[in-house]
Amino acid sequence: MTRSDPLTETADPPVRHRRNAAATREAILRSALVAFTRAGYDGVGVREIAQAAGVTAMLVNRYFGSKEKLFAEVVEVTFSDRTLIADDITTLSRFAAASLVAAEPRSVDGFLLMVRSVANPRAAEILRAGIERHFQRHLVALLPGAQAGERAALFLAVLAGVRLMQQVLNSPALATADEAALSRRLEAMFQLLVEPPTEQDQPR
Image 1 (cartoon, rainbow, N blue to C red):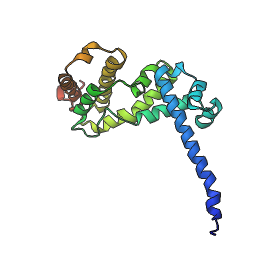
Image 2 (cartoon, rainbow, N blue to C red; image 1 turned 90 degrees about the vertical axis):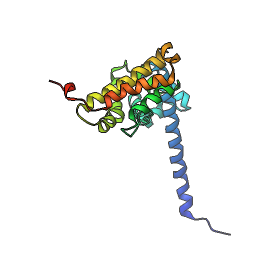
Image 3 (cartoon, rainbow, N blue to C red; image 1 turned 180 degrees about the vertical axis):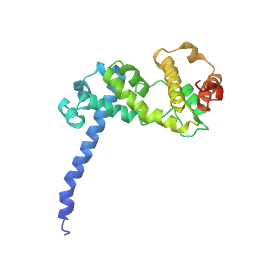
Image 4 (cartoon, rainbow, N blue to C red; image 1 turned 30 degrees about the vertical axis):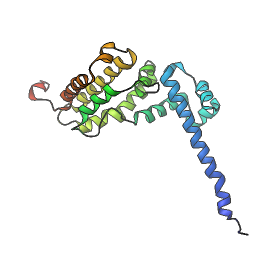
C-alpha cells in the first residue's frame, strides 16, 4: 500500500479555496456587468448584483471594497477588449468601419455600459479614465504626425456617435443602408483623422 504524501495532502485545500475564490469573483463581475449595462451605475445596487451572483452583499464588498470599486473593475475588464480598433495603422480605418457596420446589438456591451452610467459624475470619471487608458493612448501611439491626441479623440467620437445612432436610437437610415457603401463612407471619415494634418490644417 502506497503511503500518501503529506505535502500533497496539506496543499490540496488551499488550491481548492483559491479556485473557489476566483470563481466567486468572476461570478460577481459577470453579474455586475449585466446589471450596470442594463440599468446604469445609479440604477442598480450591490444587493441586486450579489443576489444575481448567488452571494451576499457583504461578500461583494469583501472582494471589491465598494460599488464604486466594483464598477471600476467592470470598466477595466470590459474596455480591455478593443473590438473596434485595430493594432495596425494601415488597417485602422477599414477595420473600424467594417466592425461598426457588422456590429450586432448586444445586451452586454461596453458602449451601453458607458451610455447608461455616464450621468453619474463619479462613474463618468471612471469611464473617462478607462477610455484614456485603453483607447485614447492606443490611438495616439498609432497616429502619425501632429495633433494626435485631438485626432484620436475625434476618432473615438465618431465611433461612439455611430454606435449611439445604431444601438440607442435605432436609426432606420443606418439599419437599412447598403452595408458596403456605408462601410466605405465610414472608412473615408476615419482615414481623414488617421492621415497627418497638412500645413493648412495646423493651428495659426
